[in-house]
Length: 177
Image 1 (cartoon, rainbow, N blue to C red):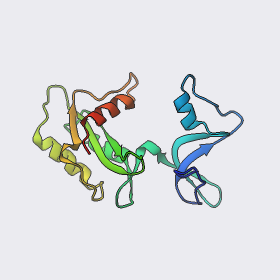
Image 2 (cartoon, rainbow, N blue to C red; image 1 turned 180 degrees about the horizontal axis):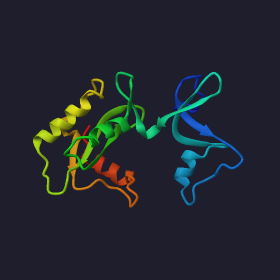
Image 3 (cartoon, rainbow, N blue to C red; image 1 turned 90 degrees about the vertical axis):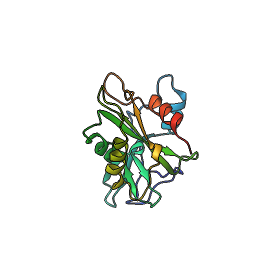
């Protein structure tokens, strides 16, 4: 495990999982940017967050894109927030995206993207119900009134996976610092 500076993490401290082996890949096909971010000199930097015990056991805790550190210092699982969002009866689809500071080190906001069932229009009480449902998980982190955005559909591929570049474009276009 390595920290954000690329140094090895202490025993029990979470960091990004770095792996190497004789069958490891060495690059992404025709993607120099992703290759330079992922493939280090002799290893692969995964998007997994993990820790290692004193006995050498590795515990995968989640993914880099799934965790945010709240201003209180407490970790926040974006997956938990997404699950809570999708349990609301009027939400057909949705996701919660992190808005990080320009240096990428701190969380400055969350954007809640919601697709309602076909034929249902956004209602003021929907926004309040969404904010209320998420508030107990947010540990005092306040969502801005305009953090909830209603869209016709959430950008996904044919397999249902979120199309992050399209989602991020939507997010950045609507977010104001």
